[in-house]
Length: 244
Ligand SMILES: C[S@@+](CC[C@H](N)C(=O)[O-])C[C@H]1O[C@@H](n2cnc3c(N)ncnc32)[C@H](O)[C@@H]1O
Image (tube, rainbow, N blue to C red; front, side):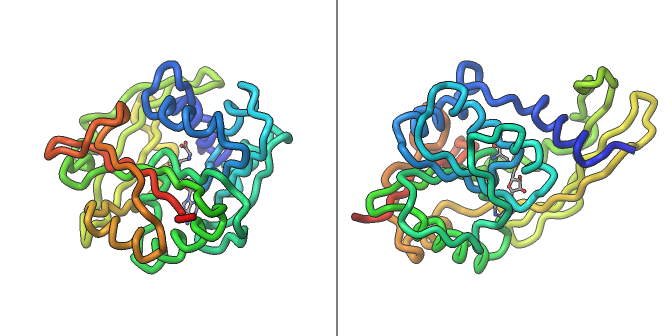
């Protein structure tokens, strides 16, 4: 009743990439702009790389994602390389100055072994001295507690259709939160339900996995203005480096 393609378009409407408005987007824009070869792992609909090209990036831009519908939207721009695949299975060797995972894409890596394989592949894709920037929601902030139907919102999609969207948590186990996202007509008629699972890694566990994969943590922040991680931080923002 609400297609995957329509849902991808709605994602872009609800999550516009705009460094002028969103501090998280500004954080990544600062890193991407001077980097001559950028790999966006879990690029989704490609909004960030679209923005980079539109704003004069002349270097190599590559977006990788296993979601064919999101990638089809990304491919509306042909001056960026789009690759269908997962982080763990990508095979680039020493090609990129910068790799990123934005929009909490890192949390889609659920099992330690998938995180290990993904980090190894990102490290291999980077040149010596290259950097990997990404964020993960800090478990201490328990963001999932706000994902309930009473926090739903009304939106109007690009076709002018009024919708109600809400989330509902099914379970929390071993650092993995399982939840649904529901789209409904204003009268409550459900149009689609998407089930998702996200990993919430503790900082120490994340750092152990980064070290094991051969990364050095160059910078760690608890928010998008480059403040430190504190007991109130909602994010764990990392810039990791492949040693020279
Ligand atoms: C919330 S979206 C973020 C998209 C985009 N980076 C953004 O900032 O809007 C998470 C993306 O991660 C992708 N993803 C899930 N598992 C992945 C994996 N193993 N490797 C790479 N990408 C993955 C999903 O398909 C999805 O497009």
